[in-house]
Image (cartoon, rainbow over all chains, first blue to last red; front, top):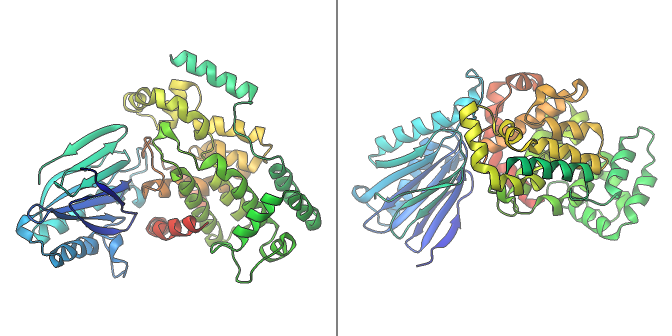
Length: 160
Length: 285
């Protein structure tokens, strides 16, 4: 079955149904993919930074985007017990001075993302994170699998 | 095979015929505008000779990013309202688009992805220059941002065949992607970009941006600040994943260049956080 491609831009948050495939491109940002295996509905958040610190742009930050994504899914009739998460991204510059805050963003994004998922009670099933590669990720909502293309190599994560 | 590629690239560079072309009017306008004694009527006349250039310039002058509110219907009016430097930026934008919005296969960039990346770097770099009160550099870093990766348009074909070798070199020698490009193919996309700008007869300031945006430390002193601004804007844009390709983040963020811009750590993060808004502006151009 052909999947309808839906692009998720930087600092965007989208949900979709089983015939759709959500795609985003990541550097130091993290893509959070949550799937309800019972309803076959899923969503993706593409966050830039870990903490909103009062900003109203909730899609940009892990600590506000993840709860918003979960709420959107709950509104569609999804339940937390059937939801699970996969995350990707959080790359860092290959070479940077450790004292430069910009260099830490990828790692901070991963850390806070995991923390927020844990607090929300969503199981994290797999991650393709860190390193210095850019990633194109495709999240297939018919079965919840995630395809990660990084540096010309494809990797599939099927667990839901 | 690597020897063959080196030879072929040497051949491309020495003959120049296979390097991309843009209309001669572009370098004429850039050099006129860079002349302190320029006569703006002469620039307007030069532009007016090319009808499609004129149409495209007027379209951009009235776009959300460049517009100053009132509708602009003539090149004369555009120069008065936006200024010569901004008109020159628009001329480069209009004429380079055909060269830069194609798919860049070896680097895994789909059609338009590099163009959006270039515009994002250009807008971000210009904003940085304005914020650090260096309005005098705004046009160089904007135009430089647009064309900084022009070398990729030629090198991509060869990177497609050597990508695995290049990645292997980055791992084994712990060097950046562009150093590995040079190791494997004899040239990196900065070297090729410089040759393209020589063909286009662009000024030294823009050559410096193209040739050293990953190695600002090697830039001629007089252009160091402009090169550093584009370097930082490029890294921030890549980190946000905008136009990130197969080379990923296998690059270096140069701490001395950051220092040269005078941008604080907190502000770097602020610039990174506004990339989504800048991409939106870029897509309106």
